[in-house]
Length: 310
Image (tube, rainbow, N blue to C red; front, side, top):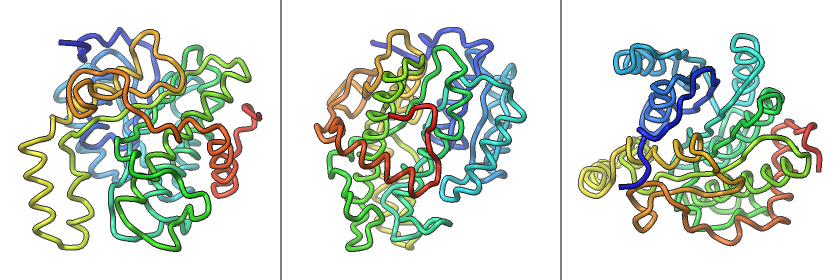
């Protein structure tokens, strides 16, 4: 049968932040962490949907210690405000940061700061958030940073000459690049943590094909009814549930012995099933590419990881 949510250890006294926790994988991740005793911050772009998710979570886990804080990963000002509030209200420690939120195959858009939306939200927003929360992570022995990528990272490496897709925009290719960026970020973060001797594990996970609202979001934004219906049909007939899709993230976040820079996904064809080591493109372990992306990300976001200077 393999590892399930029932295998999550007791998390009493642990502090966790989960981005995109109002629905799908993020909600399931936050709920199971709270069920095991963690104090969880649901980081959500919409305060209304976040409040609804919190009500639902408490109805399912009455003992949950959870709050909602607004976070728009497409707005670096919002990312800074979230980090400042979390530092002020939740204390000094942070045991777990789950970089889960994301967008998929959207029509061409720009973030509040002018970045291409998929790269800006999926990578740059989480890069900035992790850097701003880094002091709390470093103060917490055994802390973990888990970044959710996708098997779509196999579509393309990051194009360092065109990070904002200004030359040509192909939505699925750009999505794949943003997911490769997640893995390059994890690779370089793990390397820098090891170089400083900090007690933090940086790892990645992916859900395989899980039924969430991501698949239809782009089609819905453009009014493409047929594509939206096809995505919904695929979710019903082929995808595994969001609960099952969240298991690799929960494993990476809580299981003993998770290795830095590991990549966990579903066991069966990287598509569905219990958590297991996942297929990973060789370019996501390229040291030079990871350093180049890291330096570019620092310049673009203005967030520098001073405590992890290589």
